[in-house]
Image 1 (spheres, rainbow, N blue to C red):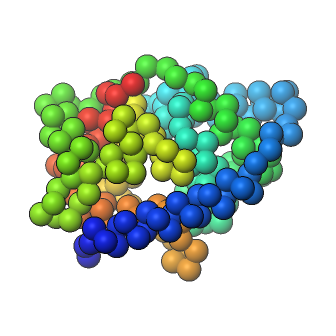
Image 2 (cartoon, rainbow, N blue to C red):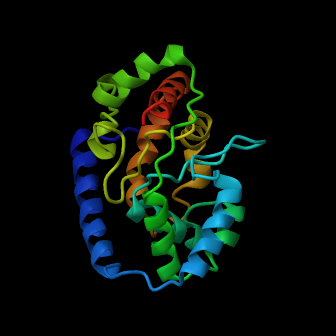
Image 3 (cartoon, one colour):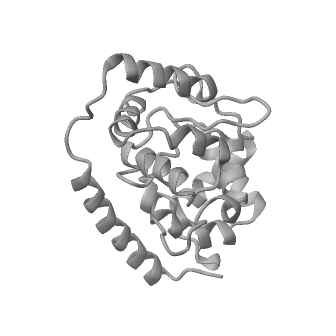
Length: 215
């Protein structure tokens, strides 16, 4: 299955509308006590690294530091709704209040540790080309269209800069097994389904290597 450029633009516009609506709903400072927020942040850091930089163990844990708050809030809700499949994160997320979700997202947005890197250096140049130019023959648009030229994302589109390369590879290579699990209730991540499907294994590894070393 391929996504045309027209369809992509339409999808992005629809997602932008949804983003604006979500922003209206989430206006206002989160009403969470400092002690409650610190306790939950410390809990998150046991898996995601002491500065939210990600962690490599038996399974790569994603970087949360510097992430777009709206994206983090949306993904927490996706875990709760089981639109995104991850049993561990469902258990973590479903006990959070909307106020705490917002406070956590804002807190992680302020962290800015050095990236852990880890992607093969030989793949970086190809990954940079795909990120900036896309792959026209495969109907794959530039990653920068949604994730910004610096890969730091915007609004509901996530930051990729500094993300662990092995985490990125796992997510893109297994997209259909985790994302979009409720077809009747999609979010803007649905834009990525055909893109992830059309990327080859080597192309995924190249993009993951490129973004992993960006600060």
